[in-house]
Image 1 (tube, rainbow, N blue to C red):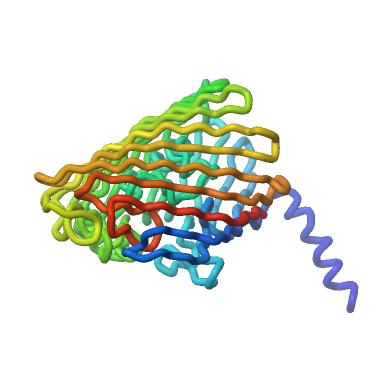
Image 2 (spheres, rainbow, N blue to C red):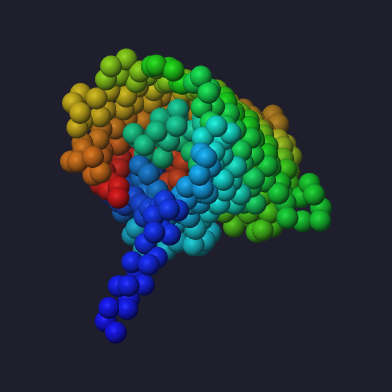
Length: 378
């Protein structure tokens, strides 16, 4: 009787071998200590999860179907490492959950909750999304969404294979409602990488977002209606951008320009309340420009710096954000590093400084943040 389970496994082994499938468990654990000089008018000392990359665990599934075709799937959970709570509105697999088919010649088609092509191809060129600096250095409010704040539900996405250095993608996110235009989205992007040069451009559009929890942009995992109603209540959102990286030995230089238009918000104003003063109503527009540099002093020491400028308008209101982000990483191994990041923001007098993903805006036009921590990948 003891031999029966072993005999069953041996009998099944050829079937598993022929399918050549794989299921990979992976993840990132990122934790640190955060200091903010002015968070809602007070100094803040706190522990923080997911500073350089969001803490996560996930499963990647690949089954070889033959002739260059594979079935693929990914389930990815976001977790606050300090509390164990699920992020992204409490979803079990809130970061990503999708399934599809991939072909070496014809590209990849996936269905589910996922990033759009602009996020896939343009975001890695932003210093805060390059995994070299903290996400707190994203452009104000992550207005261009290349800090990866907002993911899309109900999404069909096609990505081409890389051909002559070019790769492109397009996606459509369904409303799942009889009102076809209610809470839907689409996006497209293109990248070219050859030798030391990588360039990318992308565009996305959200229509009637966050009016439900089951549409393309769910209301429980979107721009915050409590702190940024002038973004969360916009009737239509457009985001676009272009960027480039150039590598010279141990040095990587970057430049990126993005824009965002939040049309006809039904509540709130960027230039009033906790985020600003002086009034201003109507559509909110952002223009972001960034320069960055990364340099490996040694294979185990990486230093990074980014400088960005954002111009924001809403009706008669107009203001600016200047932001500097700098940091160093010390790699204990290929999978574990220690990091130290410092950030400084200065705004025009009618805006309040506020680093993305930190708890609260400054009560003035300046904010300073320092975060130190450890990141482990598995």
